[in-house]
Image (tube, rainbow over all chains, first blue to last red):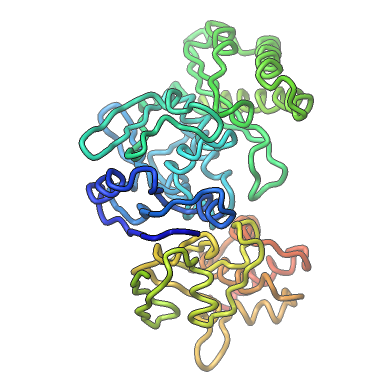
Length: 287
Length: 157
């Protein structure tokens, strides 16, 4: 490792100043659960590291008017423990709980999970299904964009060299709405998602889908919203038939997106079960 | 080089470290706490588990400079001068140790659990050690030992 300088950031301004000064020579480190492995394998060779894991302002989950804001260096353990991540937001809690191991969750952060741009990032599908935005700060500027716009390609995010992911925001969820999450991993703990799906659901009085948003992970270059499935389910009652038909549309979408991949036959079949499980978890938690 | 100050097993250290040193290397090679084991070096096995400010972490994934100002406990720090820790005693009594490589990490994960939750269910115990791999025991004896350790700790109070 050719690291020449390391800084333990004490506040945001100091971090933004360093990012502005060192630009591409610099990497942000929070939990380090991915970065330290990359450094060891020399997949990344930054000259400067800036640690943000102990900056208080970058931790925590709070209500901001009609929004919930999660700060960038909030750990998965903090998300799991938060009272604001309630029964309606069970999908966010379950996604955070499904990451790595207790040790990883104590260190790994929501900002890191997003900015790595991993296709299998577990926290991303629930945040996409919540229509989240991200607040990006740099020395003299800040901008807010949708989380969806942040993802450019596998491992590539729309983050400028001097920008820091400050927080993630989404609208508070009402009593008649729910967010669910379902994941297929190869084992119970420490499983990287083979695929995962998150569903945001609101039914009207006649039990028809008033609002439905579906996002998945490990089924594309990054987390993806499944708009064709959403459009199909909108205004329909969720019964065996419509769920089955939704699953088939999802399969078609994935066949198209993962064309030529060796994992396609497996994922095409598996996605059906995970989709149905995410929908039924949403329905279970809706009352 | 970078100057840091940290507490390991209740003793304070002022150290000058290389920028890319990992916490595990600092603990083992500089301070001599070789009870911290390196298995995979990628956060999969949990052999390098230590307690940092009350929470378990993989010391192979923390850079030493990040631990500036932190309080660390390794397996060497759980026993008192007179006797081993009740969790260690329970591991011995139940026969939860075979090759022993995972044991320091297991015991620290158990300690972090029991410090917060003195009467865990077997399921909670399994969840608490889910980041620690053991290739010998099949885990049942380890879960038994942690259950028994909870009793020892309660009796001791």
